[in-house]
Length: 168
View 1 (cartoon, rainbow, N blue to C red):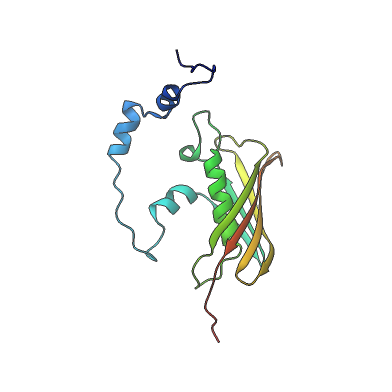
View 2: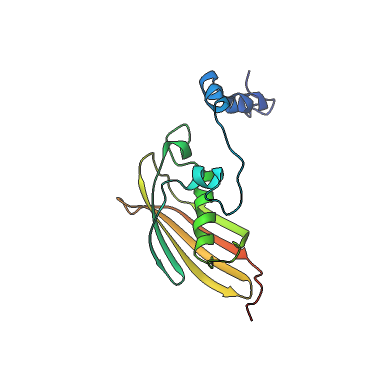
């Protein structure tokens, strides 16, 4: 039986759901991931997580992007994985306060409201806006919506901190 005494699913069932199939295991074993040097282009992580995002417009305090949901960021039911949504909130929320030539700010806190789901191949509009800045602390809001239906997929508030040396 896959339930414990309280009638809840057991740890064994959870473990089985995370196991790779033989095909998945074989595909992973064939991957080669070369070492990455900072500043030498996108890392494996950036390439994997952000491949396909398009920056459409940048204004002071605003970034507008579009993103088509790819298979590698979809869960088994064909929807954009919640972790991928959180990653996009983190990356696009950080991009709106980034100053070229300075190190990226560090995420302090994120709060994400998952309102709906995006399906494989859906095109999303992702908008990031600066809510405010004080000292090295910045607050942003990221809105992710389906480009065709206008339905809000997620809204994230993102706090970041960066201590950058003065150029004076």
